[in-house]
Length: 397
Image (cartoon, rainbow, N blue to C red; front, top):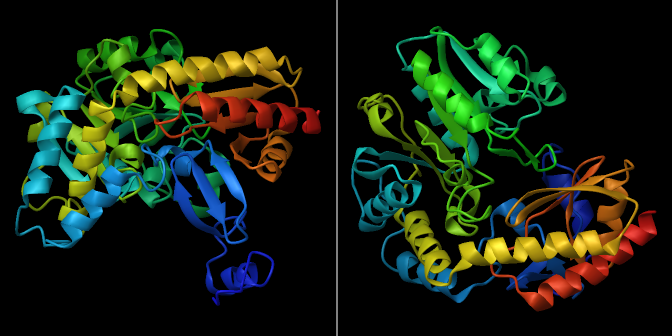
């Protein structure tokens, strides 16, 4: 691409010619970012209230992240899993601490949320060889074959069937869980908030009931906190607001602020299930990704960004309510993971209108807008969001 080639002079054609058609057409060719903003190849500026789908915890070009990349890249980027590195050990210890897994906790590192879920599936298979795994309807756990097998969206699953056997999808109700769980079930795998469904929470008391039932029957309770974790929902992890302790939690997205990484953290007896040689990843836990994750998690803690997620989430909800648009039927979610339920199926139109105004939000489905800004946002960004989102709603009405 030449210096003079811009968003209007050929990059989209080159993308289509070179890239697989598995993803939708890109909205723009982005060149750089700073804080909560990104710029495209034509110099257009956008307020990023999606943060790479809940990935860019510190926003773009944060000096702490940049320094960590620079420092570690000049020392050691990759070694095989025949060796340990200090950043890897430090991050495993940090994840045991912030999840609450403690001394009995253990950590497996991969490169993505889907890989964390694949590890969780293997963990489930090791639970006394039980044949059944439960997941929820309308859930999303990833695109790999194992993660897709758990995903409760038939339209995503059907082109790739037959998938992994033994997985059953149930409604997200306590009654549905009570009806199917017994001593033949290996694991229940759930998202505390279904992000891809439009930021839809579980019923009140669901995780407490699930924990009681799984403990009664010797079933592993595995939580997918890939999108809800790392401070986004007002705790380090969403389950920490419910008073329960899972057997394992899958993590990714915001851990390293944009550097690819995933992890499965096990609690208590579940930490004893994997044996040497039963799982692995060439790049998992490499020193570059783990060093950046340590820096990002350290900054989230020292800058008080979990508290900021609570405060700013409240402000955004209040601002959307105050708009008074008839299109806004419901506001869902926690912290800075927010779903706007719409009274009409116009989410894609609202998202397009917002983008034309310089605001990035996401149409999670036809009737839901997903909002997941960086944890660093403040009053100025929320004021700009409110002004542009108001105009997008008005244009879509």
